Image (cartoon, rainbow, N blue to C red; front, side, top):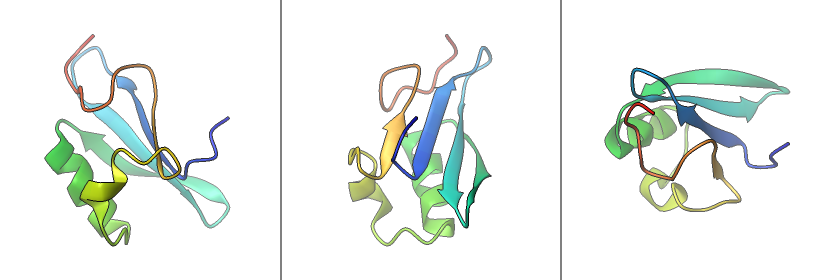
Amino acid sequence: MSSAPILVHRPSRTGGRRVTVHRHGGDEILGTAYSDHDLVVFLESAGIADPEATLDDPQWVEWRGGHAHEFGAF
């Protein structure tokens, strides 16, 4: 189990990665990201002050089931 509040799930078979945030005692789906830009937009909407700097911070974001910053189909 991750302690990072933001989880970027494994790439889907059709491309894109689901993004969830753990807050208020539960997980909330922010959407499906197809690029770092999408991910930054989701994090901004979730109230993250500097989302671009947060993407590679393992205390904030866990990239699961694939390499970070890769959004293509597996």
